[in-house]
Image (tube, rainbow, N blue to C red; front, top):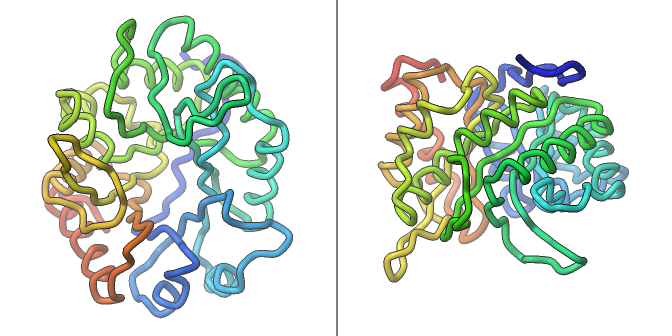
Length: 281
């Protein structure tokens, strides 16, 4: 049973979207079939939003601020300044929710430079629960947390990632941003079954889904967001949609930007993968 004070679920209907980047602003503005957007919160100033985001907001497209530096997975409480920035982004964009990563990003003032997996222990769960509650107390809209891609696991893990996320949801009511590309990465690199994870995750708390591409190098899968999503990632999207109808599915593309036609084709591939499970795009 979710504990008293847990925040409301984040299941706002979003549709199929794309991550807004300054390099893609005109592409997104003229692209049909985009239902919602996600913007990296650290890349914008709430008091001076990019003109493209203002234009897209006037068209009624929801925009979700997506944080990459809050670090709820660390031993230290989330920074009040970082939380205030996330909250200001949500208010400036009139966002239905905000999202962040269940990740370790810094310790003792030293930045890791990566979104690292958290130790999945009972003690870690206790600390992260408190960090999530602190964030929820400040944010004006519901929070969703994303599973991360990993190239290593901690030796003393007591829970699987799905079990850890399920208990965190139970304790806090936080929403889930499930990145199927990250599930694929962890399956490729660590041998962790992505479908087993989907079976164990509390998908009734799903806020939305990420899809992205990457590449293999020297036997390791790198989740780069610079290529077309491989078929195994889209197959996982279909598997997810066979279990639940996701409120939203979003394409991430962060560098080596392709043509407008290529991006539109990626959105079409996402809709096809959803339809394969009977889900509506």
